[in-house]
Amino acid sequence: MGMKTTLRTRARQWWRQEIRPILILAVILFSIRSSLADWNDVPSGSMNPTIIEGDRVFVNKLAYDLKVPFTTWHIAQWANPQRGDIVVFYSPHDGTRLVKRVVGLPGDTVELQNEQLVINGKAVEYAALNMEISGQLPDVEQQHSIFATELLPSHSHAVMAIPGIPAKRTYGPVTVPAGHYFMMGDNRDNSFDSRYFGMVERREIVGKATDVVWSLNKNDYWLPRSGRFFRRLDANNSN
Image (cartoon, rainbow, N blue to C red; front, side, top):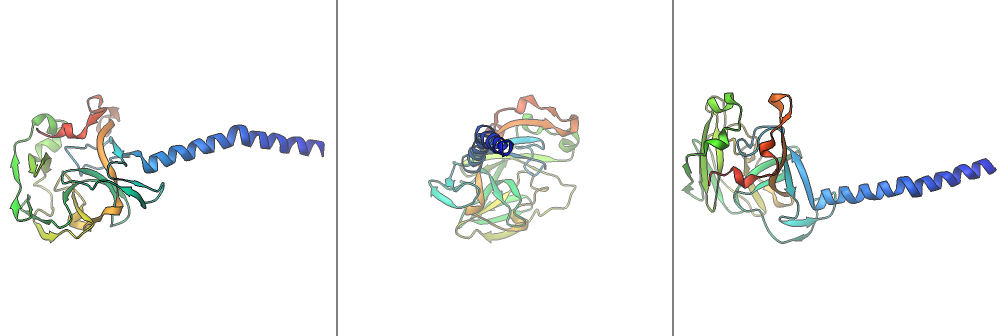
């Protein structure tokens, strides 16, 4: 009995002194990631040239609202995504977390005419893109792509097209329902977005992507791209 009592006593001490503090810390840290801030790895090129494969982006989960940890339930809401914001959301297709740009707001009519975006009947204008931005991509992508600056109302950003692959270059018009958003990738010809899976509900938006935390080049033995560390995503604009 004495040995069993000693083992139980040691087990309780081990639980109180070692395991319980670690579990409490883990719950706190995961709750912070769930409700306040997080990061998102980017495995695909759908947001090229703004976000490149291998980037890890910071997600501000307090940009628009406060959610119950580990859920999409809103405790409070103080803002809504704006046109041009880069957001992280759960895909209505399969629930995967995606990173795309908000193009259409609730009530907007969105259309694509041979790569040109049309919002509420007005064609969006385009300008030349700073070559420093497109120059971050591999040479083969630069050679087979067309780059431009898309001058969204109140926001401009880089876009690219790849003429040699099949894509939805003409789409719509569609009207964005209340409480929903139309998302598109900046890599217009290589992005699985609202043209394919439809509008995204407001409650499925996780937060706003604001910065590249760090970046690894998968085409160069995963070496770091130090020039992209702690880079504001807005810095990729041509303005």
